[in-house]
Length: 322
Length: 147
Image 1 (cartoon, rainbow over the protein chains, first blue to last red):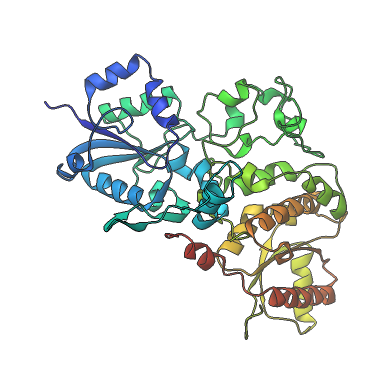
Image 2 (tube, helix red, strand yellow):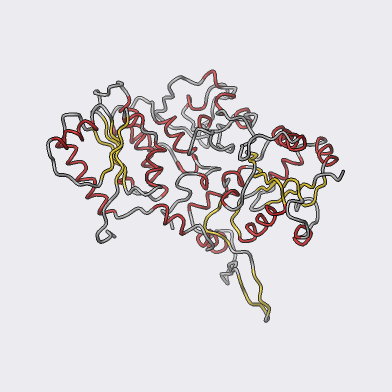
């Protein structure tokens, strides 16, 4: 029997998700022995036409990582969707929008101007900026169009499963691959990690107080957290209460409060507002003025609460600067 | 710029023990006030998750009122203090998104303050009318395509 065909594709990606596949170490050999990799741009040379030649549904499973924000990404993922029986959103960017999703606080034009014209390290006297179409020596050249908003993969194509994380940890990847090979998959649309909050599996959970009282916010940029005590109890914003578990508490073990890359728990409609509910409700302030002064100390709420999930939030983007 | 003929849509989360009863009193006392508020009865202002407020704004509300018992009067003793601590943080978040903090009001209205309920609704309606329509979904979707 022919081995099942598997594809990996990256959209707006940092390469960390590819690294996560390589992090399977020698176990990747078992995966490679069981499947036939037909597309993996970071490691193997395949072209668009190779994939176009497949019949619909001929690829058993396609893993897509990265943010979706170019017309080229849309073209590729739509084609891969047609050719694949299963599509898995791999990593925070395709699951939630990811860190590139913070671009949604601005427009594409603002981002291009900052990158190519305003940045202090740029030497661009002619003010050259990427254009979707251009004419050079009589040849018409075109580049993929940049969208104003990063989208989640499932806003562009139908997605069967989500592997969360920035990047997804090797044990979850292996579990997912094993489940696919054995045909023991959960209901369509599932996020392939435990459906509980990070606090429940956090090694610092015992020091988490019943009622979180934050009267003064601290930041890891300016204070050193105590690695033995719940970060929220110390006044550091930790997204644990509203974030899904399954990451192996990698950040916590490195003395870094949770930044939320696994996305909201199934109960939380919005990761950020749910965290406000968790951390702002208690405290000792008993007047509107003192509550306002506590809130004043919370620097950059959007960047902190939606570091990985702005395109998945209820508001989806910012409109202040546009 | 205020839209000609713009009527603000305001969602009000009213605590069952004080403010909803205050709204009832405004009604039974035949108070005339702006018809722009759609009241939702909740058990306590402390039950109002910031998610509800953001969801209302994203889905078409131009403003959100949270009204509960005066400090010290909460039926559950501390629920209104919880609401009071959340709202400033939510306002800060909304401001960063580009939603004027003045679109979210937190007011204490007791069961006997029918007049005050009517005044709050009138004054909030006028404030939102000056701010103009929010139209969040339409404006956000207009920026989802290519640059």
